[in-house]
Image (cartoon, rainbow, N blue to C red; front, side, top):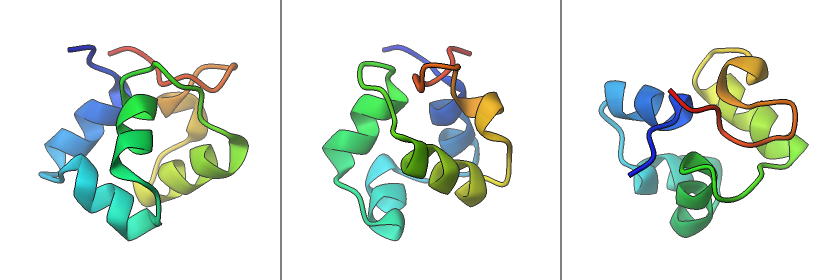
Length: 70
């Protein structure tokens, strides 16, 4: 299991991937792939996740849009 800052932040808040996906209107499998760094997040999703977790995009994602490793 690849631990990224995004996934760690979600876990620290006691949320499941399914809960976050449902609240933001995305498929759980898509959000999981983003979290694990296997899929690049688009600009809109990066902004949405940064707002949801109250942090900067650069804290969660690299310059290419992949989730930053922890």
